[in-house]
Length: 214
Image (cartoon, rainbow, N blue to C red; front, side, top):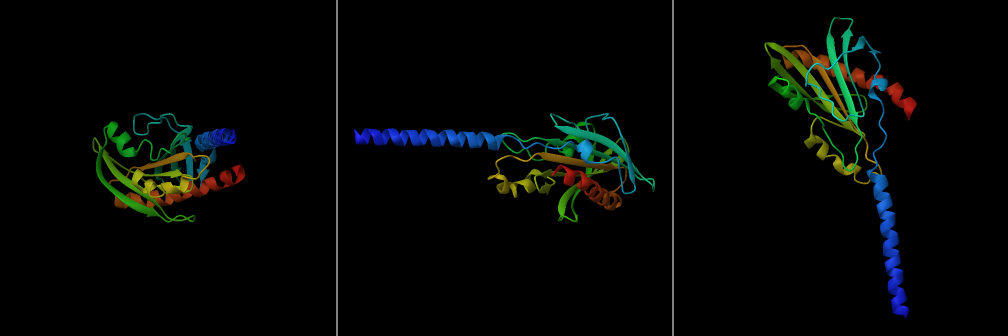
């Protein structure tokens, strides 16, 4: 009888622990709420003024995004910049680098001429951006993109994989954000300083909104 009782207590303990683990896991897999990017990124910052612009082709596909926007910003010096941003909640796993521009642009008929990985020296710490020179029907544009999951900014899946372990103990997965910039320039050399400076201003413009939300 004592042995049987001991086994029953053991089975009860295992069952109780299993229920607790499943409850914790369920909570862990529930995505963290993500913000509305169209609210967090203002229409005006620095020397730039933006306006909403429709998505006319497949260059910036938005599939199942929580929020997104597509804008054209004009600077007082005459430079025009397209900015596309979207974010996704992560459920059972983190989905890094969704809808990479090399896929979307080529699907819309653009050909990759050159690509370059650069570092954006932002005040919170440097992070990688990839610049890609595309050409279609004699027109050339240069894009810059980065993704952000939690506090990690990266330009591709390989870069995210190096930082993935920091999220394993998280009780809720953070969302993933995508920022895509586009400027009409014939070479990456001409576009790089403009894109890097604009990226810094976009990130800096979000600080007041993020501070209010936290």
